Image (cartoon, rainbow, N blue to C red):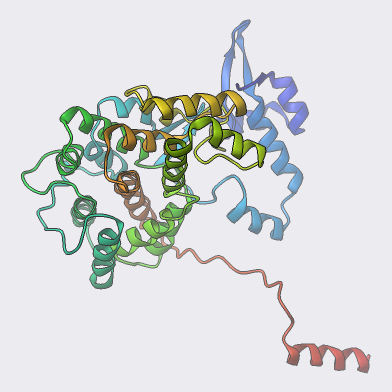
Length: 394
């Protein structure tokens, strides 16, 4: 659980005056809450203070700043799309968990894109070729990226139209039912031969997955957008990054883990992983030390299969780690016997909304993202010889 400290303690740890601490609060870098014992005073989140103190110790040397810009815990690109407050994600200031109770992915897209028009993902374009799944998805998207038009010189309204068409076509490639206009979660339910009640679970999952601040896939999409690449190219850049097993395809690792549980039993699987000091996929999340609220919200809406429920309980009991959204997705797929790649399909389709939002937001920044490399390899031979001659002459 979070711990809270006084202003005096925060100032002491940071070596700052109260005015500077207030500035950190106003910029969203430091959480504050009223002191229950004295409402005239405030308490400050100790974890935020510790993070700020650590960054201060690093210093502002150019090399340290450049390294931390890419690999530090704080993204260097300003965004108004998604942020975390008190352990929960917010989309443009609205609680994502609250939105997931009733909002459709179309409504969340309208919010994240800042669209003045209603978003409709009911693309009528047929599946281009092959069996529904990620091969069809990436093949179709690559074709669109190869022939797409640059985002430069085009009205925002036109880009919004193209964005909604892209999400609709992507959903089609993952097996969403094509036909009359209706919300995307219902098209997925029909395509996967599920009831509307299951469709509502799919709606909740996709809203929870729509964005997650500056992830590696969002950064990839923004890099492409900064070059003026087409929207399908931006989306393809983001989704190829998302497909990594340490990112959006973590559900694949969890799916394999659950297959082990079903084959060998949860007790044997947990004992094997813990005795070998192996991390158990799908448990814990570095952004949510108290547990992934997206997973808790989704798991509260259905009963996972008994073996999976016992497995989750045992892992949590023995490790103290809570299941993250990848476990919740895998449990949902198992509970309703969805297609084998359904977890990735839901994740990719939902997150395409966020990736396109990041791409569109990046268009408002008139600067190409171009980091510099810090060379640490061998010195070229010609340059080394020149240095040796200079040394001898001295």
